[in-house]
Image 1 (cartoon, protein in one colour):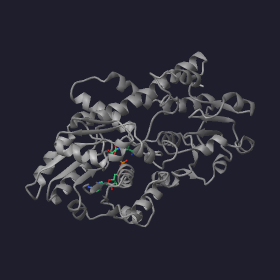
Image 2 (cartoon, helix red, strand yellow; image 1 turned 90 degrees about the horizontal axis):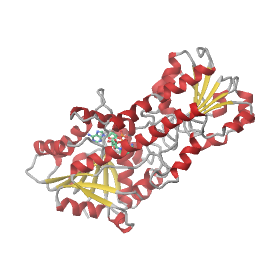
Image 3 (cartoon, rainbow, N blue to C red; image 1 turned 90 degrees about the vertical axis):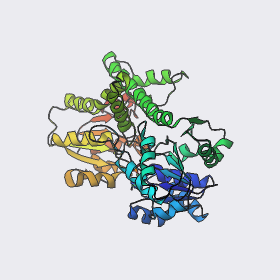
Image 4 (tube, rainbow, N blue to C red; image 1 turned 60 degrees about the vertical axis):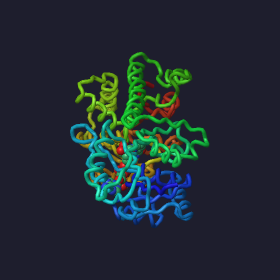
Length: 434
Ligand SMILES: NC(=O)c1ccc[n+]([C@@H]2O[C@H](COP(=O)([O-])OP(=O)(O)OC[C@H]3O[C@@H](n4cnc5c(N)ncnc54)[C@H](O)[C@@H]3O)[C@@H](O)[C@H]2O)c1
């Protein structure tokens, strides 16, 4: 079995590298960020992901997993090179591929014999061809290689389980030799009878965008139904629950709320829309999903205004900052847009999150107030906003909450509490479509 080199040790690279090692592969993870590599070597994970520290430790111990900044050495020792560097949203909404192209150049310089180059990052259709050309141009030796697209579908917060037991693995490949290598790497998943979908490279690239766009559409769909529910006086939770029992629809991604955020959906939706626009194709449904999502925070602010006329100078307690529970990731988190809007209005923002406080501090510094306990954040606050459904927010002690809050408005952006019960406590409770 060839050794694997994983370039990039972010949420995807680090998890994929550790999981591939757990499958029995020998994996060398490389990053240009030496601090990151140093901390991983010291057993400190640079990201919060449940179970990751133990998984990395176990595989390092077993001699299957190692970390380095020495790309040359890692590539020389490996037959398969995965690239898992970031593809953030560019200023014009397209995927910023600068890290992808730079990594490809760096990798090409050290390729000294046949290698399989696997693009794990989410990249627009045609990028693998472009990357292949870059590699060809920068090769120091006249060797052959194959390009594979193997997009990743893991979710932060349950990344290890998602990688170990995926719904499917997508492998875009144009050569039989590379197909065999990929089969070998994912062998344990074959044994679990995981669907492994082989396609062309371009198709694999599109599958990732189509999948994420579909999830975005599903979320925005139920959010629109929630808006309608508010006017009709019906409860979107019941609507979604009953819809979800229909196997053709399914219950997942059918929760009304503050909308999608995170490092993937917003940027991937934006990138596919950008691609389509360039090609003169109108993706009306995806466009609509994006518009609906963009308006969720505005709706929340409007709701606050309808309940409290003047927000300036008021304290607002915000529980949950990460875009979803069990991650410290703040990329495109709705909380950020919400905080920005509150600051514009002169609100005194008091925040608490179990894991994402350090990352939040890096963005807002002293412009907002941080608390190590949800109840401390609530002291004297006019409004309590539950932004992320961390488990600990599901069991708040309302006796205490009542005493601490100055006002009685609760904006429950994830619908984790029952309106009637909240009203019985004497709160005004708002949830989207509830
Ligand atoms: N985060 C997710 O949940 C998720 C899920 C599925 C797919 N993806 C996709 O996977 C890709 C990676 O996402 P991420 O969230 O892991 O990104 P990330 O920003 O967390 O990590 C990227 C890492 O790559 C490193 N890097 C950048 N250039 C490098 C180079 N030339 N050589 C070596 N290392 C380099 C960075 O230092 C960083 O550690 C993106 O395309 C993303 O869309 C992400």
